[in-house]
Length: 443
Image 1 (cartoon, one colour):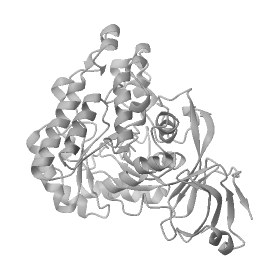
Image 2 (cartoon, rainbow, N blue to C red; image 1 turned 180 degrees about the vertical axis):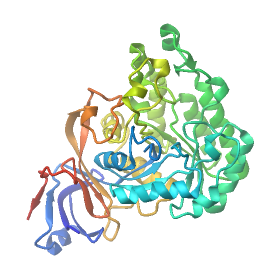
Image 3 (cartoon, rainbow, N blue to C red; image 1 turned 45 degrees about the vertical axis):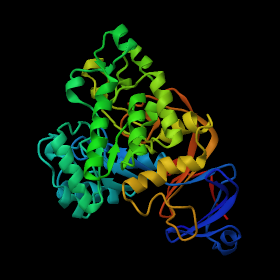
Image 4 (cartoon, rainbow, N blue to C red; image 1 turned 45 degrees about the horizontal axis):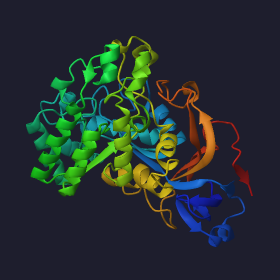
């Protein structure tokens, strides 16, 4: 394995430090890093770069098995590495569904073979995501994939009895149920957020209360059974208040917000461009402001990408027929910088918390989201916060192009990503690419 000497990096955006990466760990820091670096170490001049622990995504759709035309585990995890991630949780709505030990182990092994990031399969809560019968939660937990997060994401576990049983069951192995909060009866046929814009343009509305009602029910169920609940892609001001209230009562609930809900609003639907069709829908500016506040004050624990690739056939069509979902792995960090860091709401240390340390804790991934310290696994990302870039989806590593950030100028650029000391990305270039990286120069 190549040894790397990183010089003059700013850990968590503060100060300057040298690091030596060897044998999969941070072998030395400070003066010891330069003193003990072998002659054949590759030096990376990180002056002006922020050093963060590798990012962890609790909410990624990799589509394989079943929809390899939209994404594969290899292409999706390559995109994750380009975005600064070293670990992702692969959602269960594949074909076949990840509802058995055999399927989650298949996904886990494909992730290991791809080698870009650690892949942790999310197990389905119900058989076939049908919401009628519990899936093999215990078998998935005991499998080689050691599943700890369970979700029917894409659909809601709407039956309160089934949700209660799932919350009770996962307690046995310290699991968590991640709920897609959407009351199906209130959103039947819904196309976008219910409000002034939906009324003006004639698309059926998706009321905020459809999300909020499920979250309110589920935090009470979690309190009743004493279990862990995670709220996926929270999107409304009312949802923020419910989670804030639940935490004030000591209920063991965590919540995530997506990058697109931190930035985009339902006004974008006026052009009927299906790239902006997503579940839950883009909300109002008041909701965007509320979720930003919630992330800043800790009510919302993490940012999860909800990376949802789709083929052109599934998105380049009329709005009503288009699939819900957006890509996001390669732009997530930039959107967080734009909406939260550059506005003064979060520091880079906070970014490490919401995009690395806390998602690793929720997902029970002990070797990710670790401190930047000697002896720790070298899962790291170097970011150039002063860089800017214009998003061109066709040039991204993901196999799909349904990015809502198309044509936007975003701040920040991932320069390098390291997975246990191995450079998966250098100078923004995935390391199966023959292009020689500019930042990695021999000593």
